[in-house]
Length: 115
Image 1 (tube, rainbow, N blue to C red):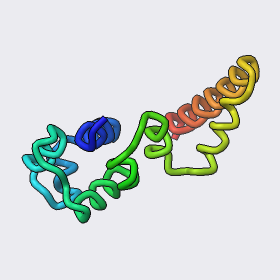
Image 2 (image 1 turned 180 degrees about the vertical axis):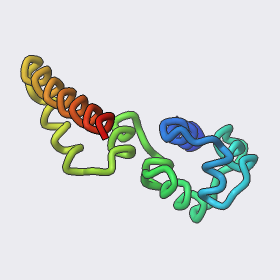
Image 3 (image 1 turned 30 degrees about the vertical axis):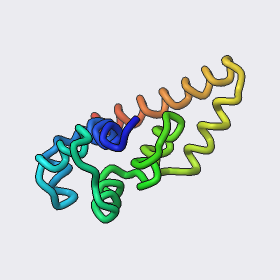
């Protein structure tokens, strides 16, 4: 995957348009489009701004791989480590953890609706 593809993937995951990302970084949407289509490469300064706007690292944008996608998007490193530990559990225990998480999220959503 190229730098442009990673920028586009992260931008889409954050539900940002090219214009919105461009404003955050101080560019035009045309330039963001050029990066995404690999017609241009960002300078190191712009790469850092893109990484900040997309909540990732410059390393991920330049060299990321599929294993890095989650860690690039998940900023709570403790939570990331916990998910890695859950991955090592057997399927029954994983299902139990997923059920707890789902119950907690559902509870919070109900609480928000009740406000």
